[in-house]
Amino acid sequence: MKLKVLGLAAGLAVSIAACASAPKVADTGEGLDAIARDYVALTLEIGEREPGYVDAYYGPAEWQAAAKAAPRDLSQLAEGAAALGARLEAVDAEALNAEDRQRRAYLTAHVDAASARLRMLSGEKLSFADEAEALFGIRPDLRPLTEYDAVLARIDALVPGEGPLLDRVTAFRQAFVIPKDRLDVVMRAAIAECRARTARHIRLPEHESFTLAFVGDKPWSGYNYYQGGAASKIEINADFPIHTERAIDLGCHEGYPGHHVYNALLEQTFVREKGWVEMSAYPLFSPMSLIAEGSANYGIDLAFPGEEAIAYERDVLMPLAGLAPADVAKKARLLGLMRQLARAEYTIADDYLAGRVGREETIARLSKYSLTAPDKAAQRLRFIDTYRSYVINYGLGRDLVQAWVERQGPDHWASMRRLLSSQILPVDLQP
Image (cartoon, rainbow, N blue to C red; front, side, top):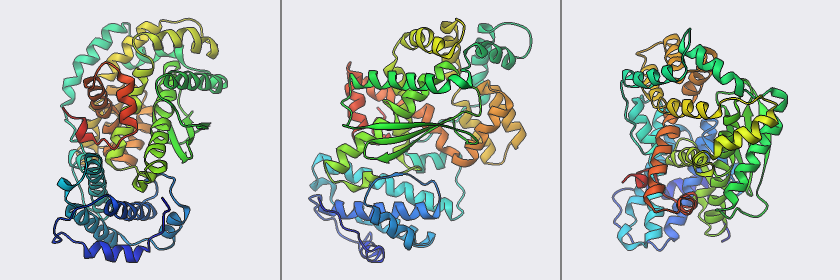
């Protein structure tokens, strides 16, 4: 399908004209195509008002140039989002086939998230749970921190000894820290293994590729910058020690079957094969991120089920890192318990962002419930400062994706492939 650039002013005028009072209309897909084009324009213009809002874009370059040349202000963008919502509401869902009904729902969810983000950029304050639900489509459960103390007690029993629990855990894990001069070879080996395991089950686009770089002074541990054309730039933050199991995590999460595969399959399935332009723009603060982060985290266990990660780490990665043999199985049990602490971060972030708990106490809480050193906890707080309720997408997203995939039947890879090449929304993952 040949794509045209819509004049932004004209697009806004059309949007406003089609407000909520419009009657329901039948739609064969052409109306959704027009809405999708205006949605991409809206997304790109919000990206001009909030750097980082657009995580990836691989549509026509002239659309991006138009957004840069004349972005609407926040109030105009809010009006545009409201008008897009009204146009979607006016489309008669009952007259659509199942595929187009899901497309309408997908566009509606993302326009709603854009509206919420615009309200936040304009100064509206939302609670942590309200914000998460408005942006990512799922409301997190915020539990008292005391509920996680039993897990800390189990970790204490697993890693006995003198001194604070954090010091004991750090000392135990020191045997698995990759020397900096071995990071490149270990990470490349891990990513190659993640790719090989994924390629056995998912047909990857031809000529897909990635580049790898090590960086510093970032609020995150790894990032995938999808470039379009089935190509990604993967960056790994080397400021803090990277353990051997983390090479597997990052290789799967950022690469295969994680972000790189997700974006490549969306581009192939929707942009290139269907011409559905809405998928050429990935707004970070949207329901898309819960699917992206949740599937990327679940993909680790999918690629390395059971004790396969233990064996690969012990037999391949540790020798590559030049590390002496150590108790990989015990570390796996430790990390399994630490995973149970992950949602404590939601409560900690809620208290901090609401102003109920100060910065230093928040760093202490993060250090305690993630069992990381205070400087690492401070980096995590920097992430929370930057991305706020985005943190729910990792743990809650992973749990929702896993439960959905495993409900679909015994072929978990087939269900994962379906998820990664679909417009399934977070709400669709719920039983």
